[in-house]
Length: 223
Length: 220
Image 1 (cartoon, rainbow over the protein chains, first blue to last red):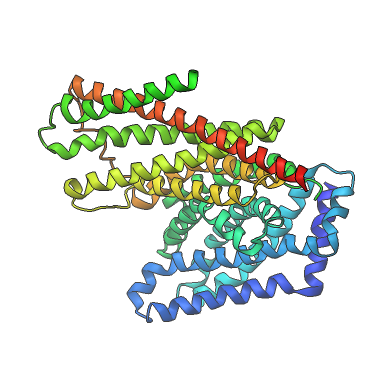
Image 2: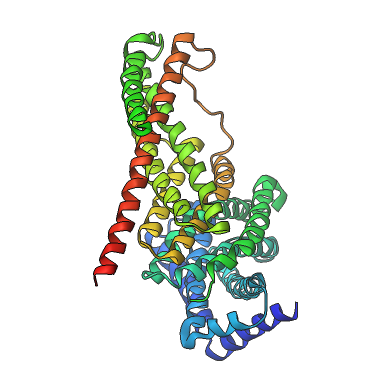
C-alpha cells in the first residue's frame, strides 16, 4: 500500500509543479462543449437531448488526452526504467498509475460538471450531487483500461494516434451506460431509475480493474 | 497429404453448400428466394465466431507461455475472422434491404457485430504494425483478450441504449423445415472447412515470411 501511495504522490507532485496535464485536459473539455454548442446552433430542445452525450464525449476525449501524457511523462528521462527496477510487483505500478490517473480525470470531471450545468441551465444542486458518482464510476472505467493501453501505446510508433483507436471501441459500454445515467439525472430522476446501466457500469469497472491489473505485467517488460 | 484432402473436402463442401442453399432447400413462403442468402450468412458468422474464440485462446496461451506459433495462430485467425465477418455483414445487408427495407439498422445485434468488426480491425492494425517484434505481438495479444472480455458488456450496453427490444432473427422465425436445417448445417460445415484450409495456408505464409526474414538477416 505504501508503494502504491509513493507512485500516486510522485504523480501528484509532478502534476502540481507543471500543471501540464490538468490544464490541457480542462481547457480541451470546455472547448469541445463550446464547439458542440456552435454545431447545434443553440436550439434549446436539441441541446436538451444532446446534453448528456456532449458531457461524456468532451469528458472522455479530454481524459484520453491526459492518459496519453501520463505515460509519456515516464518515458522522458527514462523514469519508467527506474520504476521497473524497484523491487515491486508490476500490478502495484499499475495500481499506482491507475489511481493517480483516476484522480486527475475525476478532478477534471468535478470542475467540468458545474460549468456544464451552468451553461445548460440545469438545476445546480439537484443535478450536481447525483452526477458526482456517475463521473467517478465513469472515469474509473475508462482509466482502468486506459492506463493499460497508454503503457502499450507508449512503445508503438503512432503513440498519440494509437491510444484513442485502441481505447474508444473498448469503452463503449462505459460511455453508453454513463450517458444513460446522466440522462436520468438531468431529467430530474434518481440514479436508480436506470439501475441496469448502473450495474453495467460498476461491473465494467470491476471486471477491467482486475483483468488489467493481471495483464499489466505482460505490457510493461523492460524496454 | 492431409492438406490436400482437406482442400478437396472444402471444395466439395462449397459445391454441396451452393447446391443445398439454392436447389435443395425449399423456398421460404414469406421472404421468397432472398432467404437463401441466410444459409451463407449463418455459415460465415459461425466461422467468424470460431475464429475470434481461437484468437482469444491463442492470445492467452501466447501471453502465458510464449511461442511464436501461438502468435501466428492468433494473427491469422483474426484476419480470417474479419474477412468472414465482413461477408456476414454484407450478406446480412443484402438480405435486410428487401426484408426490412433498409441496408442497416442500429439494432442491438447489428451494432454489436459492427463494434466486434471494428475491434478486430483495430487488433489487425496493432498486430500488423508489430511485425516480428515480440513485445508488440504481446500488446496485440493483450488487446485481443481485453476486446473479447469486453464483448458481452458491449452487447448489454447496446441493448440498454436501444431500450431492450425483441430480436428479429432466425430464418423464417420459429420452426423451420428440416431441409432448411440440413442446408444450414451443410453451409456451416463447408464454411468451417474453408476456414481451416485458409487458416493453414495463411499460417504457412507467415512461417515463410519468418524464414525469409531470417535468411536476409544471415546474409547481411
